[in-house]
Image (cartoon, rainbow, N blue to C red; front, side, top):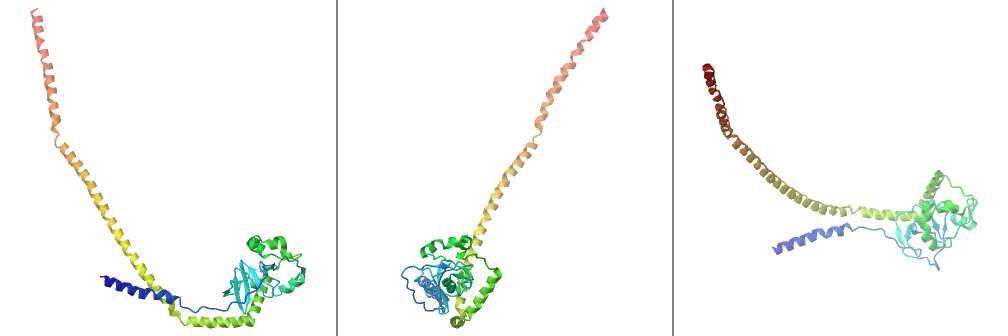
Length: 287
């Protein structure tokens, strides 16, 4: 018996163990990390008008801060990190904020001019940005109170913003480094499609787990019906005993008859008293 159990355990291990290992076999996209940026101190940033995107203007690399992450573009790829100087990881997409950023922002920053209007930007220390970026975005701080430092600022129409986004997206796709990166990604995806059978073994353990769940439910419901029938049967017996007692009472109706006899006997001596009246008649006749 022990040998049989040991054999079944080994067989189960052979069947179950390869399933997760096979499911994790895939060709992941991996690229080299960008070179580090050396900072003597945490960088100061400015906010780009009409956005809540912050950028470090004092370095040659485009280093952005948006939505709690640091973002960096390098060799046609995007990387992000929680820190400005380390911890970079590959991001397999274009961040949504990027097409709202004007590509000529450095020239506007140098000239203090934003589309013909005076731009008195504010340099924001890194510590202050980390403490306030979320509340600034929720309360629309830069457009309501500061107007991004642009004098006589007037927001652009929504349709014009959408057209600018489409133009920047087309320009981005035409960049040579972006096209090379897309070709590498497509080649690696084709290699992944050659192994579609890796995910099939995941369905087998689900069927085996669901089958035994139905059996205990049927067994539990069956014994619940039996005690109900047994409890209802003895309740009918006392009713039959009551009917039997009623029938016994109907069999003794003669108990009331002897009560009428003494009444007749009591009435007979009342008629015997007037028999003494003729004596008076005799006396009267004698008179």
